[in-house]
Image 1 (cartoon, rainbow, N blue to C red):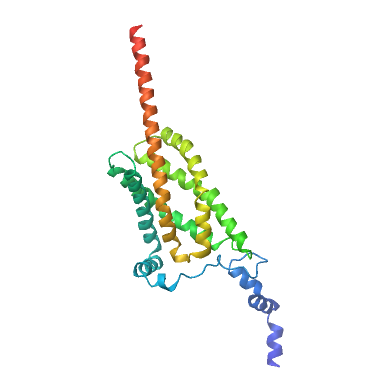
Image 2 (image 1 turned 60 degrees about the vertical axis):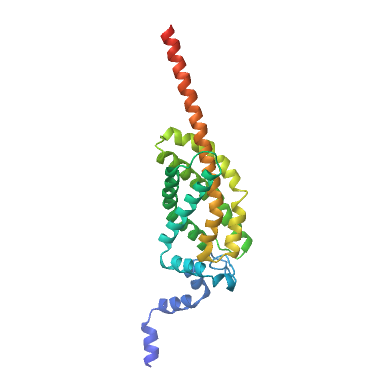
Length: 252
């Protein structure tokens, strides 16, 4: 009798909610997976690293730092990448070493660290369909079409501003350099990102990308120095033209 009275006085929504919470549909929405993807993984599946690599002391230390302080780890990693890229780029050129250029690389890399890390984590947690090729293609396409142009625009504009350049110079450098570097990025980063999302565990992805990013950053720094040389040549030509015009006016 008590059980029947309790059931009569209890709203039906209680039983409905309890049934829905126990269903696979509730669990699927709680995991953030798209509807219709019952077997979709939380992230694109990736195997663990071989035991021999995991047992390496530096790799273990990096993994612990990444878990304990991800933002600080990313700032240090990104700043190091940009500095090394600038250093290597200056080494392969005939010009003398410019310390301020390396300092600019440190600042630009540190500023990009947290947004870049947030972007990669967002990519890892989203677009995880039941079809692995579809998930991978979506992530790589978004990386190339959205993230890569923004990063290159940020890099060349910050290089200009930190070198005491103005908006016009930054705009010219972006127009001249970003399309070229973006096209060339298709030759490198789709393969790198595909390998990263497929084989590299989450806590080591930033480290793997850092190794590749050092070479890429060397290329960007080389392009930036090339653009600076072109801009300096154009500036000399404009100054010579202005001086010639004044000489003609004075002679007249």
